[in-house]
Image (tube, rainbow, N blue to C red; front, side, top):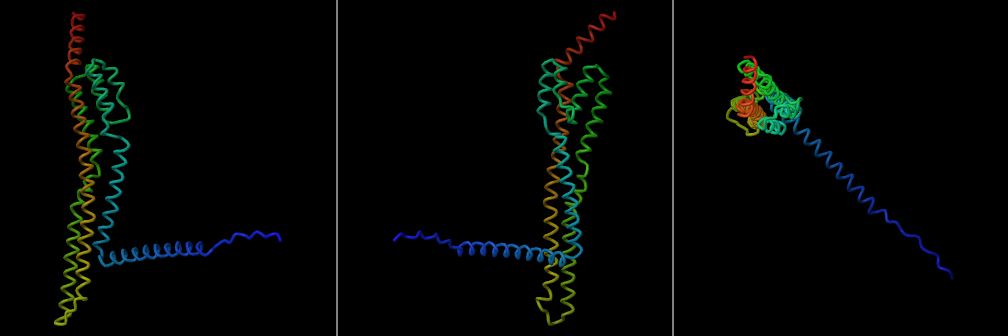
Length: 256
């Protein structure tokens, strides 16, 4: 007799169990997310108007931080590679190469280019320095724009949290007075919870905002120091000064 080959048996039970496990995990994750969202909404409701104000301030400060980071990423005021190459050529008695090495789209490089062109064209040193000071001040003010609101939010958020703490304690003591001699700890929990919550939210807003303000302020200071140092090197380069004196002496002798 010829044996009939048996068909392989496909076990579907493990697949069904795996799909059931994945489905249960997804349900657990969705339940945990909804529970977290509900808890967050409950915390905001308990915190009252102070927490809403702190949330609005955090959104406003986060927008400012993103705007300033985008500004620094676009104009790159701290980039000094082209400036180092340009100053090296400037000290090597190559003003044309030094001017050409600077990037025209970067504001710091533009200020240094203006200084080199002014010295090469023998402009009035006092007027040139005044114009360079004006351009540098304008650039630094642009970099420091919107940093004052961050400083105000960083200093105001803990005070708002403290005000929420005081308001929560006032509510707790009012409930204690209304309860009389039958004081229930559960009655006081609402006010104490509100007091602790507002303090925590105020600190949570103030700490990152103060850190971001310090970092951005330091970037603006480094940009100002870079402008001051580079322009000073342009003006005090001895080789360029000797060349300017030689040119002026030649013109004076020709005029005579």
